[in-house]
Amino acid sequence: MKKTIIITGGAGFIGSHVTRLFVKKYSDYQIINLDALTYAGNLENLTDIEKCSNYKFVKGDITNEETIRSIFNEYSIDGVIHLAAESHVDRSISEPMAFIKTNILGTTILLNAAKLHWKDNFVGKLFYHISTDEVYGSLGAEGLFTEETSYDPRSPYSASKASSDHLVRAYHHTYGLPVVISNCSNNYGPNHFPEKLIPLAINNIKKNKPIPVYGKGENVRDWLFVEDHAAAIDLVFHKGKQGETYNIGGNNEWTNIDLIKLLCRIMDTKLNRPIGESEKLITYVKDRAGHDLRYAIDSSKLQNELGWKPSLQFEEGLTKTVDWYLSNQKWLDDIVSGNYQQYYNEQYQNR
Ligand code: NAD
Ligand code: TYD
Image (cartoon, rainbow, N blue to C red; front, top):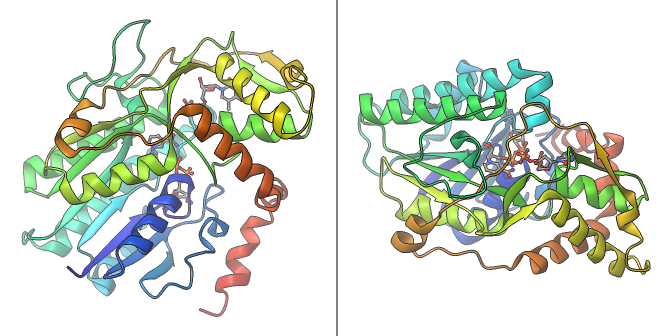
């Protein structure tokens, strides 16, 4: 069926993988990638699909109500896959207001635009909100987050995402807006901005720079390959039940220090260094304020009801990721130098 879908944050890490998947898989869909191109947005993530006839990039800020309403009207949007967000916990600690603005206000502006545009005729419409497992707070040594776990966000980032989840549910409950939400664990893979742990460590190992490990490195994250997340988003968008929440996770828990040591071993092999060489770069630094100890997801609802499961083992996914970074040095250099922000001007100045 023909549909026009807006993907917000499509120039970011996860958004670019979701955009590519939808553009390639659904030639009868018109895909609008709406992105403000903040520091985290990079159109170099999408050069392979930018000329596809069912793809269009629109530069716009979800916190600008007028822009968003006019985009809904101009393109007659049927579906929203909402990924645009401020996404880095450390930045949320130093600059919380940007998170409140984009994640809470921006999401509400999108919800309102969808509600107004669809005028209570919701047949064939869907607002899909992409969220994080961090809304559930922090686990001790035992247990997993299920869809029933109470919200207990503990950083400005997770609190802003929790607020946006509540608003999405409120629009469903109050106005009948057709919504679905998924909460995913930590993603990794190609195009990950090098402020996050895995790409930062790959970059530093390559350059023989210290690998900063917060606190004692004992914090646990549940890692999922980004293309597996994109596949889950495809499934939830098409088969998920309206009003429901689906947890997405890798069933793949690692302490930060064990993960870094595995990464060091992979990098030693790839860079022809003696095994153990890169580990010498590990440097323990001051812990993150309010650092959540452990996240781990129970994704059995998604697995049992929609038949999803992760496709890659961690070592395989991490090796693929390292290979991507080593063969895409320009992508990384452009980010480190800031050049990637020129790409939009060069590519789109005459459009
Ligand atoms: P990212 O920071 O890589 O990308 C965010 C994108 O949103 C960028 O392209 C940026 O330009 C855009 N953006 C930011 N503010 C905007 C605004 N005001 N208007 C329009 N566009 C704007 O983020 P990511 O890691 O790809 O995460 C995407 C989504 O998935 C987020 O909602 C995040 O909360 C969620 N999520 C991320 C992870 C993860 O491990 N990265 C895990 C679970 C959920
Ligand atoms: P991050 O990639 O920022 O994701 P999140 O905070 O959303 O889980 O961090 C992953 C884990 O790695 C987290 O426990 C914080 C830790 N960390 C470090 O130890 N050093 C670093 O330089 C970074 C960026 C993160």
